[in-house]
Length: 284
Ligand code: FE
Image (cartoon, rainbow, N blue to C red; front, side):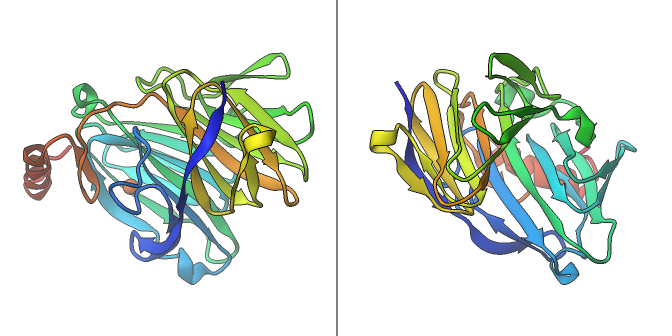
C-alpha cells in the first residue's frame, strides 16, 4: 500500500496581519483544508515592506498555531506574559484554546524573512482549554541525515530514519501531528510510512517533487500543497534539482468546522460567543 498525490492546492498571494505579504495554500477557501489542518501560510521576502508591519495584537480561539522560521527574527508576546524569540530554524507552538491575544513582530528592518504559519484544529472537547505556548529553539529541533543524501528536521511527532528514531520536541497532542522539514539533493528521495487513517499533505517550497510509487507518481510544483490519498508509505523524489518541502500528517477530527477569521469552532453559536467574548474582554 502506498500514498498517492490526490489533490493539488496551489498557493495564492494574499496579505494578513498589518500587511504581511504571504502565500496561502491550505485555508485559501473553506474546502481547501486537510482535516485537522486548517491553514498553511508561507511568508518569504527580502523586501521589508512585505513584512515590517508584522502581526500586531490579535486574538485566536479554538485551535493551535505553529510558526516555523527559516530566516529572520520575530518576537512573540501574548497576554499570558510569554515572550518568545523566533530565530532561523526555530518554532513556536501555541495552543489558543479558549483564547489568546498575541502579537508577532519582526525584529529586523532589512534582510530576508521566511517561514510558515500552520493552523491545526483542536477537538471540540479541547477548544475551551486554557491557552498555552511553547517556544522551540533551533537546537531543540533534531536534524537527521537521510540515507540517500539530504536531511530531515522533525518539529512534531516521531519518525524512523535510517534505522534510528528521531523525536521532535512537540509530542502528546491529541491529533498526533507529524511535522517535518525535508531537504533533498537533486534526484534524492525520501520515503516514510504514515500512520493509518491519518490525513497527510506535502508543501513544496523549493524545487518540484514527484510523489508516489515510481510507476504511478505525480508531480507537485513548488509553492503548492499536495494532499495525499491512500494509506501506507509516501515516496517523494526531487525531480528537477534540489528540493525542500514540509511533510505533515495528523489524525482527522471529522467534526464540523465553523470559522470566522481567527476563531475556529464547531457551531455558529460558538462563533457568536467568541465574537461577543472578545468584544467584552472575556475571550481569555
Ligand atoms: Fe496569531
